[in-house]
Amino acid sequence: MIEYRSIGKTFADGTEAVGDFSLVLPSRTTTVLVGSSGCGKTTLLRMVNRMVDPTRGQVLIDDVDIATRNRVELRRSIGYVMQHAGLLPHRKVIDNVATVLRLNGVDRKEARDRSYAVLETVGLDASLATKYPGQLSGGQQQRVGVARGLVSDPNILLMDEPFGAVDPIVREELQAELLRLQRELDKTIVFVTHDIDEAFLLGDQVVILKKGGKVAQVGSPADILAKPADDFVRSFVGLDRGHRTLHVEDRDGVRVVVDGTGKATGVLEA
Amino acid sequence: MSWFLDNVDYVRELFVRHAWISVVSTLIGFALALPVGWYANRHPRLGGVSVTGFGVLYTIPSIALFILLPGILGTGFLSVTNVIIALSVYAAAVMVRTASDAFGSVSPAVLDAATAAGFSTSQRVFRVELPLAGPVLLAGLRVVSVSTVSMLSVASLIGVSNLGSLFTDGFRRDFLTEIVIGIIGIVVLAVVLDLLLNLAGRLLMPWASAQRTAVRPGAASKIAVKARGA
Image 1 (cartoon, rainbow over the protein chains, first blue to last red):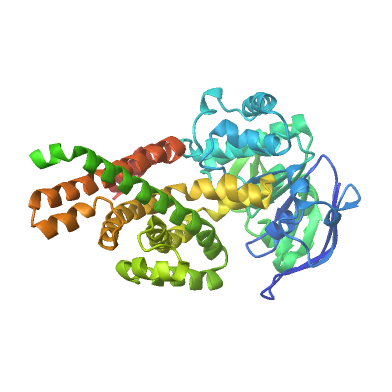
Image 2 (image 1 turned 180 degrees about the vertical axis):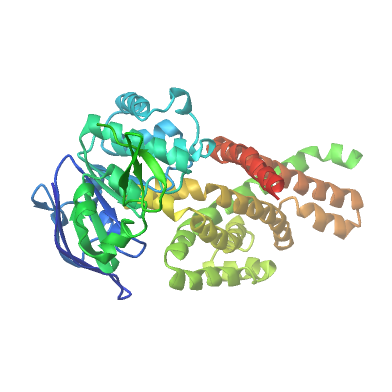
């Protein structure tokens, strides 16, 4: 379990990224922080592995204040996947993945074996292992990024817009892959995105943020759609634009689902 | 030609001497420049001052430095140490700015990812920043290597023998062959060192050439797509 207790962050130049933020992220679920740029979502994510330290308040992992933990050790115990994969261009794919294990003191042989295994888990062919990241496609690099995040089998996985830089088809593939992995692996995932569709697809708990890390609403996707807290949320999730407000029309006994713009999107089964 | 054959041992001796003095000076200058360049990249304000300061050193005429150093250091006038120190200073003067640029060329996103993966600060410097700065560092080192080889010949004027001694001697005796052989020797040495550096780069940084070959076809096809689109 991850808990933010009255977190605030003011950067050295005086900008307040986060005002007063509190939230509990239950274990073995995916929490998605979603909001426009400048809402502090990445800052909040990076507080979990102490890439950013809060100015006020505490972050707790399993009831331990992480300010008391060595930041390098803490980072080695948490998986991190970022946009553009962030792979080391001078290390082969397999070494990029094994790096985290080697930093944790796992011996070379075991690190290699486990890295090959996790490459397979994320759906990468073993023949790519000896290539350099620059020789891979964007989607493949992102899979390597996920493999690197998972290889040390951390309880917590932080994902900072991991699929933001790949094309829509590959993004859908990777999203489906992540859902499958999460069913198998049961990690506590904190996922940051600005894409509400992605948030609703992946999140058990979705946190919609306004500027300065203010929480507009927290809940399951269904809760948020059923009871949007205010007009900001209504607009952010698209309830004011028609494609989420569906109704059923009867066509010769078949119930066809039509959205607010009049477009037919599917049929309703019994 | 017959002069060369008669003096082949002498020329070889000068060649070897020229080679080791240049290589040692280049390496010392490189080693001095690395930490300064790294610091300059990290702390632009104070670093900028030190980069400029090193740059100014390069404006001191070499002959002046060769003559002044013994007085400052208390070394003998004919000591090779003076020359090595002077050339190292010049090498560092050029290399500091390149080193600063080299560290600046490392993608911040990669450094960020390394930090997130749990590299400690020193692990990150030696295992990520330094290797990734490698290609730009190597480019700088190749320039410095050539300029050091050429500048060393000036030292023959103060009596520290090297391939430049063939010029001074040739001028004194009005003997063109000796001068030409000196020039050829220096060019050969500069080219050999450059080839060795290039080879070392390929062996130490196979990823840099792998990336180039990987990027080119992709970039080309993107341009092709754009052209077709237009």
